[in-house]
Amino acid sequence: ALRTSFPRLKEKLGDPDPSVVSATVNVICELAKTNPKNYVELAPALYELLTTSSDNWMLIKILKLFSSLAQKEPRLKTKLIPPILKLLDKTSSKSLMYECNCIVSGGMLGPEDFDIAQICVEKLRPFFEIPDGFSRPDKNLKFVGLLALSKIIKVHPVFVDSHQDIILECVDDADLTIRERAL
Image: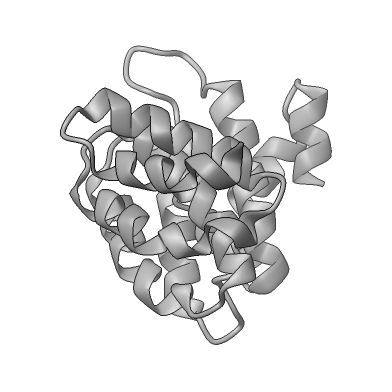
């Protein structure tokens, strides 16, 4: 059924109704979990959505999708890094900031990409800070921040030193999962 409906699915990425486009991206994201290589040809349409959409939830799905696609098509890295960094710079959404770390999970961050890694790590610092109006940091944000930081540190271990304060603070956290992730 997918073979016969694929052209129609591809067509719906350009639908004038944003909810149709969002639903289509969700379907493609789910389908790509099984075999992302089948969806590499959709990269131009997805790239257009990445650079023009302001819908955070759809952008998160597109970033997840590009994370999978970039592992199958390494040439996507040079095209994707600039708009992802732009998104990372302009968004205040923590969930979107976290997904921008698809640079790491998509294999787009290599040892030669120190400056990109530094930007990603610095954008994670607010995950560990106390939000306005609260008495302590959000434990969920702390956990996902550590998760993203640990992925970056695997490629660029030098960031352990510059974020030692955060890591050591998390080692002393009351939450066992945060302590384990920090270790």
